[in-house]
Image (cartoon, rainbow, N blue to C red):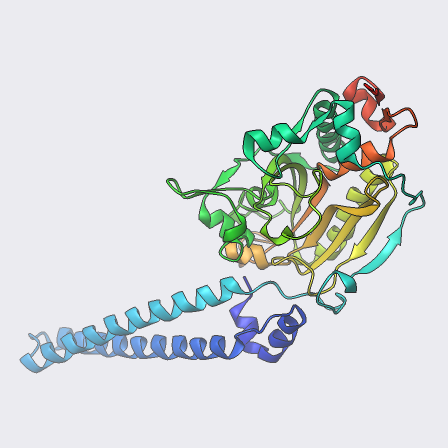
Length: 421
């Protein structure tokens, strides 16, 4: 959530920042609501002071209130209740407006409205040729992917991994978790996959993206679209003690998304599906350290691509293409020679204090200090099944078998998936 104080103090800066994101921000409405809020608080406080003065006067004079005083105080009490009711309505409307607004892009985030304006920061050395053998053809022939079974069980854009295909995914997730916990200092978390609406709201997924989320109506619990939601909720409503930050968490969970936004796009194979596995990194940091933390998390995710020997590139997203809760985002894409395209396998974002405000997560720098909002950062490290796709398509051999990266052999117990044809 954006800071109301900052919007009121610098309304034109807020307007300009949100226009960069393609928004038509209701700044004037926010300013009017804030003016109403202040007027109602002042009016209620004035009447409370009047009521207190009359009560003290009667007490000091040690007498009973007159009939006129009783009537006036009853009228005063009714006005206070009316002000409070109106204030509640104003605050509710203000909260709804603020919850609907995305985060403001940081200075330096490229201008632009869509992916055409994203900037390629760097591209690794490696082959970007195409062999035309896409995973949706190769993997079924190897007996490791069953698209028909997935559709039969659950419908379109679900899939079944089998045999070495399933173990390859499990090996990838285990390897990535081990790298993050043993080498990069993250604490592994196994969170709930169903969360309360307040937790979804705190992450920025509600109310904006409710139509893209799965929900159990009876319990009003929501299936997470990413582990970020649950990790962001670990400290909701809490004050983090001095000396604790930074906090670094990592989790492997399924992600559940209706993927309405991908309608009309190329959805062959398992590139865009309703359920997929992902290893997610998440940090809480002090504000002055969030820029360095973003670059560090980008390097951690990119290191995984390097160790898997995958040709990849890093993009800085433009203001109109960053996620709702993000203030700055890098994407990592790997080259997929079978489908001849770059596949996004990681988005690394700083959300500044946007999520912390929505969650009311605070911290103290020193004992006795006033509380502040930490910055939160998140990033895929990495997303399956697209890394799985890249390994299959990049490891394809002339005889139809697939060689897997050396890093994964200790986790699989084998170094290739043999052709069954």
